[in-house]
Amino acid sequence: MTMQRIYLDHNATAPLRPEARAAVVAALDLVGNASAIHAEGRAARALVEAAREKIAALVGGEAKTVTFTSGATEALNLALTPQWQDADGRPVDVLLAAATEHSAVLKGHRFAPDAVEIIPVHRDGRIDLDALDAALARHTGRKVMLALQSANNETGVLQPVADAAERVHAAGGLVLVDAVQSAGKMTVDMAALGADLLVISGHKLGGPAGIGALVRVHEALHLADPILRGGGQEKGFRAGTANIPGIAGFGAAAEAAAATLDDEAARLASLCDRLEAGLKAIAPDFTVFGEGAPRLPNTVAFAIPGVTSEVALMALDLAGVAVSSGSACSSGKVAGSHVLAAMGVEPERAKGLLRVSLGWPTTDEELGKALDVLDRTLSTLRIRARERAA
Ligand code: PLP
Picture (tube, helix red, strand yellow):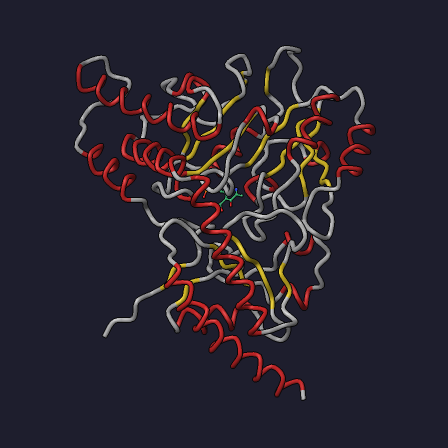
């Protein structure tokens, strides 16, 4: 009998939604290049523009400011440059980035090393707004860009983006929001967040991988140094023939996610409550990272004393449950979490980080089964750890 696997790693990649699959498959049969003016090209173009509308609707943006990219990593690399031209016509002098940003922000920007300042976070993972104020005061007279994620991929902690954006705007700066983890899981509204630039990714919300978008607050915000130059597609922001199936699937996933957003958020939050209660019963001394801060409705990041992520991940995988250590480098090995380090978590405890992230296909029944496996696996590992320590 084959074991029914339970997939609880939606923050890494969410399974393709049926609506997205259907859109991808239908688009594979289109022959048109979206830039061509014949009927086939126009059909492809119509599909791209319909998807653009759906992406814009998901984040409260305008379709004409959506640029499709190969994913959020590319969109962040594209956006994190000094070369933005807005009303004041001045390039950006300084990049401020929260310490818990994704590595695509911390390593993917195009600023000189001495033009970047990392803003610390509190122990609960939220950006230190006093430190942001101090940085803005230090850089008076210089133009800043703040990169702040709406939700953290490892802990699910939500950032006070609107508060931070208000401060940055008062200082004449720009705000880039990495909304990869919150889009499709909760309401994301560019205006409410105060985002000048916003980035999302297809595969995190049930679309295909290899597609993402950069959304600008208005058309006048112009980029002087696109990365991919060539045929001038995407209004010159990103040259290259459009990935029609990817874009169609991304649009369909965004539309499907938007249709059930509030109900799904409530459903997943109640599953996460049940998960946390179950974990507490397994190990009353467990730690939930980011506890006390508002968090995504689908994410629980925790550690149990004496249980290391690497061993627990493998044991759970063998037992049929896919969870994550929150961060994995490309070799698949568990790496130390810069997010937990920034939150001041002791390295010994950080070594135990396990992230469970739920999503649209997760059912009550599945969570019950996962809790049984977690109980068996983690209780055994915990007993072994105690024996070793004795
Ligand atoms: N930003 C955050 C918060 C993420 O979680 C990820 C993916 O892990 C990315 C950016 C990069 O997304 P993509 O896989 O589309 O390049």
